[in-house]
Amino acid sequence: MPLMENSNSTVSYEWEYYYDYIDPVIVDESKLKYNKYTIVIIFWICLAAFVGFLFLFLNLMSSSGNIQR
Image (tube, rainbow, N blue to C red; front, side, top):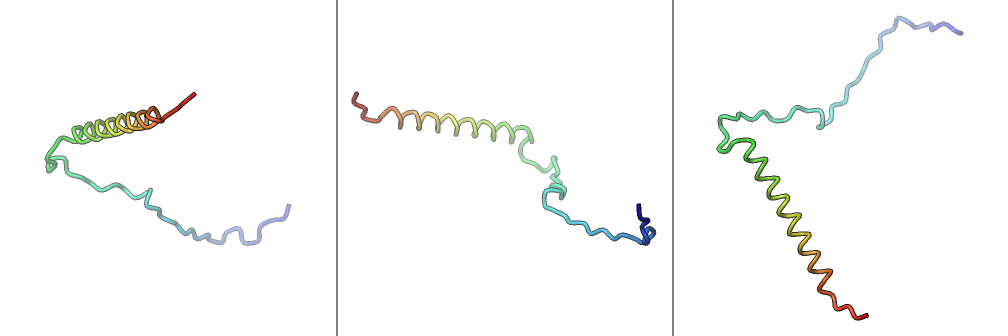
């Protein structure tokens, strides 16, 4: 097994930063108009309502076809 000739040479590293690794923006809770959990609850209710209306809309579209067998 050959020995490394430059075993004590310094290695320089180059770091790459991605936006995923940057810390999120700090928000002061005391300056918010609503409680932070209220915002999350409203988001999930709106998302569930959207999915429900989408289901109803697609269900009505599929059942309104003029099918003759």
